[in-house]
Image 1: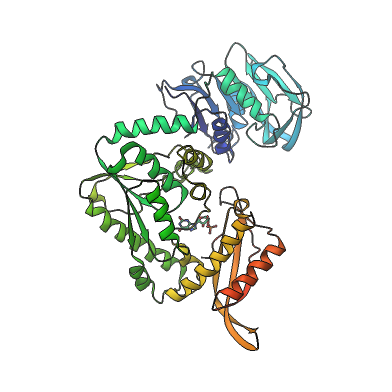
Image 2: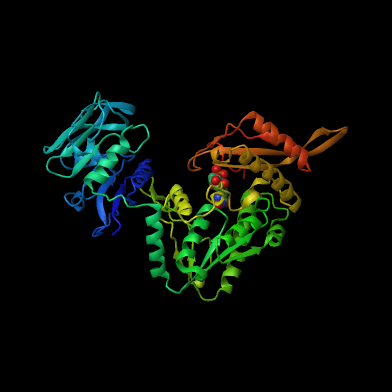
Length: 507
Ligand code: XMP
């Protein structure tokens, strides 16, 4: 039995963070839309209700039938979750006189309460709410207060039901992880046996049972997710897995060769398809970024499809989809703004069933699973790289010569980051080839050549990013090396834009 905590998502921006914290306690959890509670799932050991952008008294506020969970599982409401339970069961929630955002300290708390076991006096918590619980239902009692918020936490008498107005999941709630541990481990009884090793064992067994002797195809991109998915499947079904790795001609320097070699060393059954000529031909003269992406996407499906059809008895298409790709986050209107990303357009008549062994993992967990299976570190810590590759880093039309220039410059930058120990400090990095030429002087000669921009960013999820503050000495060396060694480039700039308002890629 795989114990699990269910986190019901009422639309808060920190819901995913609650999930991460629970996983860090080596406990499996699922984040589900507030109205999708899985009734009759014997593996559920506890329920957490998230925050929400709504007020409980808003007409559109998300509501659930508490009877489905109350009395059946231990329940912890966070922020809106706490206000919702209190309000629904007879308490009062009102706009706070002063909205409480930011740091607060617990002025008092019930020391013997299992939720606050081990807490320090004046522990710092993080508040973020415009409403406050002004009166609790009759059978609820206050178990913690701050100077400004009397009902900062409560428990229902004689029930396994708690609410906290602050956010234990955020970093600034200093003992937030302890509070979640008290709930998940002590109260819900988690065995804390969710680990990379247990994931590999149970997933391999489950894949064997699910796939039997069926043939499976999987598209490899060189990235972490598809690579880990492939190794996991290989462990389960060996040669019944066929991986297809397409070279569109716009990968990094030597990437196709190197990654293919890595895959072969891992024992994967890989078909490498060099389709660069087709991509270059179809992209000839195209300058519009969207157009480029569309052509590459379409060509990719065509090439993949042609290869996949050769495996006539394939029954499954495996993908490296990970959890953040799947979570349906709710926007304020309750509409789904991001749903499960798709098969990438493979024709339906192929009738392949989807197999997504990493669909419950966060990115750092995918990396841990990769390490657990002995995959080489350079495959696991590799920077993200866009599907359309260098095509979206060459502004203007694409030619093999421009790709060659960019590959050489990019290789110097990336290798430099590795040599200087900076590679793992940035989220991703690359070089952009600009569609302009400028005048320079080399020796006694006037030059009129291209400019490139270096891009390196720090980020945790690519949703927001800051430009990396790389050391000047390093940038001087890279600039020098690029201009001296890459024929066709005589100027190097550094991109100092953050996201938003810019994006990581230039196109
Ligand atoms: P932006 O440029 O939107 O990029 O800030 C965010 C992250 O997504 C990557 N990216 C892509 N990845 N296919 C991909 O697989 C794409 O078409 C694509 N476009 C951008 C980008 O490198 C960054 O990590």
